[in-house]
Length: 258
Image 1 (cartoon, rainbow, N blue to C red):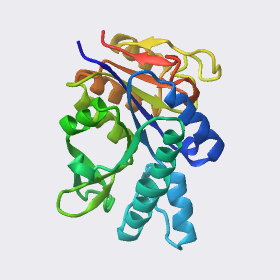
Image 2 (image 1 turned 90 degrees about the vertical axis):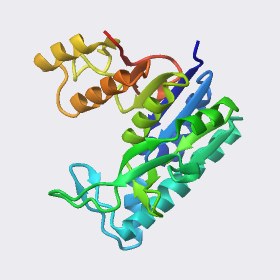
Image 3 (image 1 turned 90 degrees about the horizontal axis):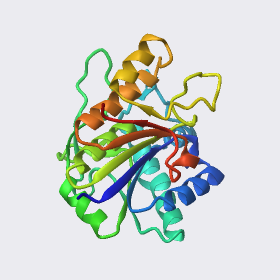
Image 4 (image 1 turned 45 degrees about the vertical axis):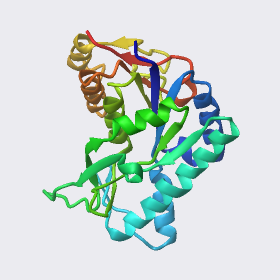
């Protein structure tokens, strides 16, 4: 029987402000058993870029990463945000280790091909060193993964944090019973978008199709849930969509097999 592992993806304001970060790390430290944290940090990157006189350009919410912006996101994601999280977890007696995809060849990507948009130094994940990551976790280490990968040709690549979390969860599923948690501002997937308490406790594929047809689930939540089902297809035991303050309580919406 596989041991359980919880992989939490969190980003934005939560990891970039002192008060919310402290609370997140306290909640994360209360999760029992093996765990992994994946973080973003885009607002901090945008702020630092502005201070350095570097323009931030976005297309459909995705950052264009030229050579100068790559330096900024490396400093912010791999440095400032990652190490603040690691130091905070160490204060809570969690033996955290901050990693990018380049460290130990943990996650290899290929530079996204130029189509209608040239995203620059942005990576699409092709390979995850799950055996090595699982070995660290089994030794009691808690990996804290920054949204940076590499191409094994000497270049770092900016990589979406949701993608990092999903690919890591899929790869680790052969070693652990993985629950993947995506944190955002709501308590879960809502039956009524105007009622924050109307959380749908569990969704399978049949439920998902019905909710999309009736308009309960729409917009950006559709691709988020499609990605969740892809993770389950790849062996992830469950995906939970919840708010950061509930990650240790088992609350939120669980995406499950039929």
